[in-house]
Length: 188
Image (cartoon, rainbow, N blue to C red):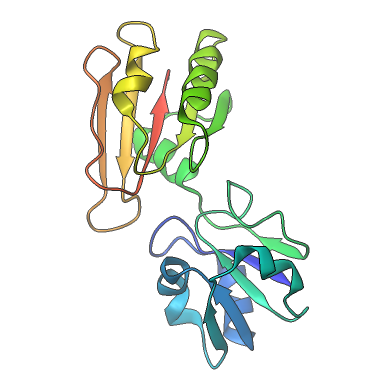
């Protein structure tokens, strides 16, 4: 099995991922992942993933598409070879022109938001910038309220797409997401 990161937006899949996809016979992915990689799928049989629990039972020759990078809250936990893609963290930090060598990663996507906010605040107090993987229900206002005044916050929406926006603010004047697909960088 091969797990390919298709990137967080169009054009963010690697050459290695493209090569594997062009030779694949059986491909599985979310609708968004299939859309991002579709132009590189030649004659493979393509299936939308409807049961994530069944992925471990796929045939060995299956190729599984993961949005972003498979090891950044993706499908990299599955057995098989992982081929990285450009993650939203890489794209966000590049857009903001800040290094990510002292970054803490907090996953709030489908997780307990209060715990994620608490962890992010603690990581910032400990001198780290924080990359936060958000979901549409994540509250930037609640995050901002947990941070020291004037802590930098950036909301990066639709990274890699034509509608991409990166809005910076502070905990005193937090930015808002412009779409349901966003991530947060704070404490930088």
